[in-house]
Structures are given as structure tokens and as C-alpha cells.
Length: 219
Ligand code: C5P
Image 1: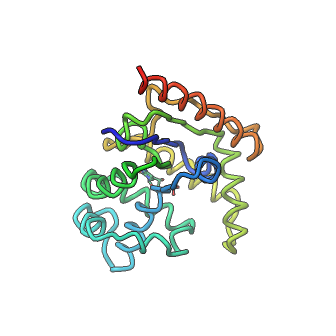
Image 2: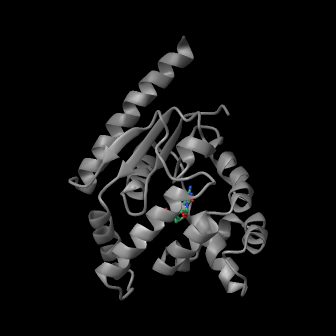
């Protein structure tokens, strides 16, 4: 796959990857795709249709018909949607159905940023810049808990931590595109970092990657 400058930002839930991707997008003037929303939409729409998210056929039928405007639904940001997303994301046919949407986004002129779990390994293995953003489960749970409370969801911290651990285990152990850093990804550990520090570190990684990429294109 060739294209303009593509930045792959992967990592587990609430690691800070979404914030990092959004900031990079703003600073570099690049469009950002939160690929988690695709899986969230498939999970939520499958359930809304009264179908079983654990059934590959049902979830794939929804994934094949997914459109960009369906990603705007605020219901996709809920705790329940995250769990449904992780359940439909284990089906290889669902992942295959969502591939073209992601690759088309990545290949747009000028470049793009995609955040998810398998961007650097499967969706854009040739991306010139790859980050894998992590933090401890406790810190991620606290971030997600605050975010959910801010959205008006009344949920206990312990339950959010249990969600995060369950999703990490499912996303990391599935056969289809398991969550893992690409061999050539730069690791960004954000446990002790503020948002500003994480964004600064990401910017430095991307600037170095861009310099290497430009040099390789000249040579
Ligand atoms: O990033 P977010 O928490 O919104 O992702 C929700 C779920 O969607 C993840 O737990 C994972 O199971 C799935 N996902 C995936 N591959 C991606 C993005 C998300 O499997 N590229």
C-alpha cells in the first residue's frame, strides 16, 4: 500500500491514543479516523436490530452496510458500546468487511491518521509513522471512568477496571488481528504523563518518522 504520510496510532482502551491522534491531527492538519467507532457501530446496530453480536453472520451483515454517518451516534461512546465492539471485533468476516473503509481513508491525498488496535499491523502495515500507546490498567480505568462520568454514566470505578481487563484479554487473545504493537512501532507509555506530555512525545516521534520518510523518498 502506498500513499501519503500515514500515522498509525494503536493501543488498548483509554491508553490516550484517541487524544494523541486528535492532537496530531489538529497540529498537522490531517484527518483522523477513530476506527474503534466502526466496531462500536457494528456492535450497537447489531444489537438494535435484535440480532446476536456473537453471531458472525449477523454482525457481518451490519458491517457490510455501515456508512460514515452512522459513526456520529453518541450512543457509540457508552460503556456498553465498548463491550459490544470488542465482541463483534473477534469475527474475521467483520474485520474484513471494515477493511476497505479504513484503507480508503488512509490512502486519501495528503495523508491521514488512524487510531485503533491493528492499524500498524494489519490495516496500514507500511505506515511511515507508527505509535503504540499504553498505560497501566488502573490508570486507563481511571481515565475512562472520569470520561464516562463526564458523559453522565453512573458507573463504579471497579466496574470500569473489570471492563478494561476483560477487553484487553479478549482483544489481545483473539485469532483475527490481535491487539499488539507492530515490530516497528514506537512505544509511548503514558501512565505518568499528562495529556500535554503525551501529545509532545507523540509529536516528537512523528517528526522523526516524517524526516526519515522524506529522506527515503528523496533517495
Ligand atoms: O478504541 P475503542 O475502545 O473505541 O475500541 C472498541 C473495541 O473495538 C476494542 O475493544 C476492540 O475490540 C475493537 N477494535 C478493534 N480494532 C480496531 C479498533 C477497535 O478490534 N482497529
